[in-house]
Image (cartoon, rainbow, N blue to C red; front, side, top):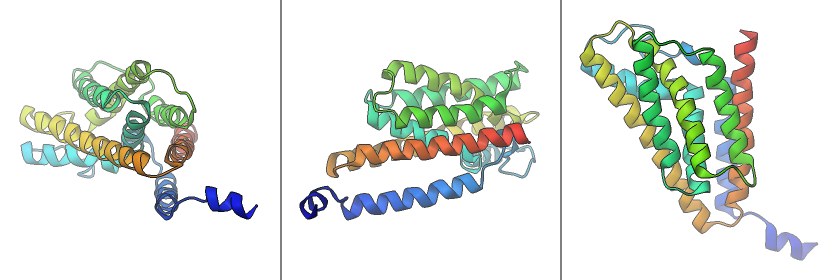
Length: 220
């Protein structure tokens, strides 16, 4: 028994990572709010390009359901391979989703789909053998349309300069977050034993966050 534990205990780095992940997860779950309620300027429409850009930077971070999805997309990209296909597909589609909103092209049950996408991608991360990367990238792109549609609510009625800056802002911040998560996960997977299993546990935690958001949609 003593020999078993000496060979299989987690390294301090992995243990600390697990503790940090737990704290972040609990914080996200406590802050779970409906997907369309996030406005960096308190509901005020941005009046110029600077405000639009800052609003775009803030929206995916203030919207914790969006943030959870972007983090999960980065982790999945690191685990599954295929480079950044998954987060790139999501980000590009989110820009299209925002444009659809501004063009008054309706997407049904946006809040429901956004919350369900966090749950689904958490489950995919937790799976020992998730679907192939192109399939997950396609699902990420589909989710991106709905996340982007939700983003679009913050700039309905804004000028074109504010809208373009808003698109640039949320595209940049999402890619920065996804690439950062991807790089950190890759580094950990290359240096620490058991890190892949820890990422699967993170998937269960993120799925729980998705379930919390989903329940908030149904319970109002």
